[in-house]
Length: 317
Ligand code: SF4
Image 1 (cartoon, rainbow, N blue to C red):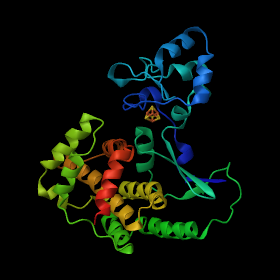
Image 2 (image 1 turned 120 degrees about the horizontal axis):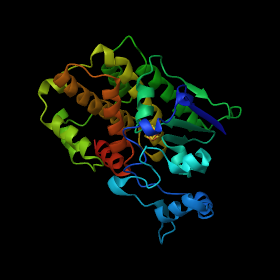
Image 3 (image 1 turned 90 degrees about the vertical axis):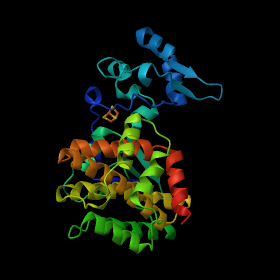
Image 4 (image 1 turned 90 degrees about the horizontal axis):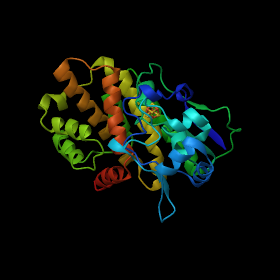
């Protein structure tokens, strides 16, 4: 099986103790059965701590018991993982070892990427200046023929990437070309009505709720303004990331036009948050942009419920 990834993929490095939004806080972490069995055999202080920190549910799921402020009990006060400190990264369960990676599976290849919900990944992706390409990872095998539907799918997605990376146009214009390519027409709702839809979705972090609430009070100019020049390339990277990750929904039964609309809507929400910040502070840097993208990803991309609600809403059109 071939494995593909964006060309920045191998540059990723977890910033661990320096991470301000650690994935070890606020997320319930399931432990795969192989690792759970391994943890049971560990003795000493670590074994005792693991024993106290793991919950075995009746339905067979095993997870860490989150502590105060929903911290993983293995995250120490220096922001470092006690399991890694003692056993190295190979001691982690599958979820922790994998995060923030995501995978899309096709018949002849797997595509892997870095999820924007991780602040280090968000800064890496949005900070790239060159056009992103997909590369075959070293551990992949030689290409095999894929089926007709997938061949057509990859051709269409290639076109989408080319449109989104057409730097003679603004990102907004490129997104419109993508929508036109699929005959997609957004539901006739004002930006403010869309923001209100987002304020009604499931929320993980109250800071996200505050950002969306601020947007509901924003001046009309926030929604009408174009992206400043210095945000064009970061938003190109964001659009390509969304396309790479979400066009795979086609094989879950969503048509291309709905996926294109979802991408357009996602870009708009992040854009409006940035424009609101620019209105307040005069500028937004990579940190600020990556933070909004990270929140968007954690709240929407990583919530099956929210993705489903938005996709269903777009499918009503
Ligand atoms: S969110 Fe990313 S950078 Fe932060 S601890 Fe998790 S993997 Fe590391």
